Length: 149
Ligand SMILES: [Ca+2]
Ligand SMILES: [Ca+2]
Image 1 (spheres, rainbow, N blue to C red):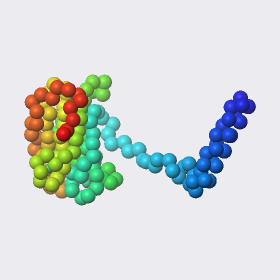
Image 2 (image 1 turned 180 degrees about the vertical axis):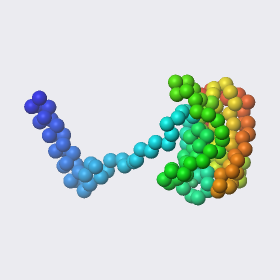
Image 3 (image 1 turned 90 degrees about the horizontal axis):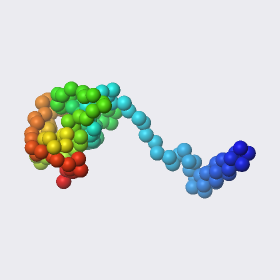
Image 4 (image 1 turned 90 degrees about the vertical axis):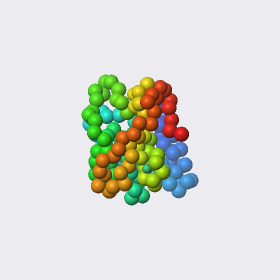
């Protein structure tokens, strides 16, 4: 035990020396982030970021919901489908943000359950986030490894 304590003190001393040499402590250089809990229900395996309301700040899309950045407190539905059993799978395996129709606004592309439809939701370009129109992209997306190209 004494050897372990000596080793720990030597390790901490080395960290302190490195911090002094760099001018910053270890705590000042380690990643800084805040964990946010978006929902207690399971809607999708996929989630992503995009600027859906076109305000220059990234928003989050997960399942049928968009959370406006940067605080992610204001949420709104772009689609309407229920939560699923978290012991199973959803119909939303991958989510991508891209301007599919070239109108300057991020749309949402979803690869559903393997072997089933891949689809995208057209951004209505409305700050009130009115109805997003769903379009079929592929009748069958067979591989989980599918990627938006
Ligand atoms: Ca935004
Ligand atoms: Ca678009």
